[in-house]
Image (cartoon, rainbow, N blue to C red; front, side):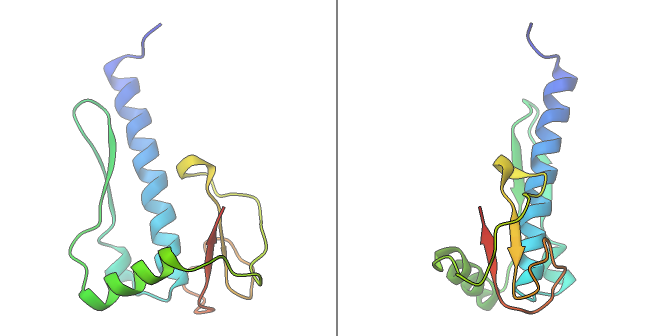
Length: 112
């Protein structure tokens, strides 16, 4: 049975919201302020496809994001139960080992 348009939209919205939450958590763990994280917004097309709008990002912030994406996994970060989110991905932050740390400043994020 094919999903209805509203079911498709709701599923797309859930996926986009989960992805936005995951990106915001990662940005918080990098120590970026709320004004940067607030630019991340979930979006859904009319067909129900999930997207993220990242907003305008300063060049230095974009460079930090790129460096974090390209960084090798850190041995001091331990796997935890994944957050509800994008493809079951979970974040573990810094030395405190807290998921979605909210900006602990420990300087690390692992995605599994």
